[in-house]
Image 1 (cartoon, one colour):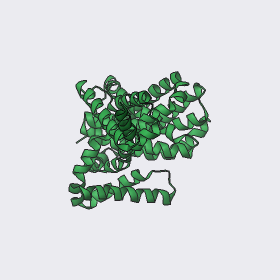
Image 2 (cartoon, rainbow over the protein chains, first blue to last red):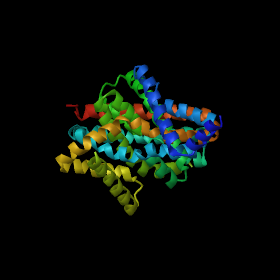
Image 3 (tube, each protein chain N blue to C red):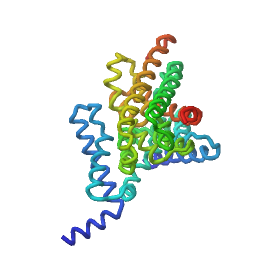
Image 4 (cartoon, rainbow over the protein chains, first blue to last red):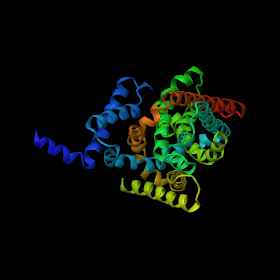
Length: 238
Length: 117
């Protein structure tokens, strides 16, 4: 028993345990996602977060200790955003032919996300740091963090709210867009990327390669649009 | 593989430097994306080098959001005190933005005659 305690205290201090746990939780979540027939409701990010949240809670591990191991995975977010250049490049011709719908949908989607979020939040009496952290929630996490800091929000809270938005969009998109009878994969992917950034793009890539490429474009364009628009729109609601 | 990773990291690093120098609120990796896309159109060989690594990273994109997502446990009490409002905000704003975005795309594509392929 004391040997076990010793091994546990060794493992719980280093990055090995929580890096392994992150990959194991995701492998399990991905298996559940596949077993569900790739149902949007079995979102792998959501399942992984729930599994790891329960494990951390039961083992009494602080988030900072967990993140020391998980940072190796987290670091890859930056390079992954750079890598989206590839599907964008592969679809450059089709993107050029869709320049008008892309511009219009970007403006409409980005503004709707921010105005409805801030309008509803004010109606519920939310203000201060939480309101400012909600404003950039449709932008990809690294952008949401930067924008929130700039406009008086909390960076870690902004990251969490952005990820929750990404998960919400990835779950809602397929049933919602089927309900609206929209069949253009470009429109479906682009709107999802604008609204739900990388997690929406990951979902779009699972569904259809065209949707994936346009989702990547939507994410990138909305990162820029949110960075420019959020500081102008937030003061209207403060 | 090393050359692909090197190319990707160099684009990200150049993006971070440009982001800070310009003082623009656009994050480094997004500028890095534009730099890599420019590189891909200029150098055909770069596409073959970058493709396998970029595809395997993007194939597991969802995994990369897990560590930051677990950070939700540190904000549970703040989120719980507004739980009902936040559920309405998340569902309402996300459904509205996806619908408005996709409907706008489809309508403008029809008006401007932009068809796929």
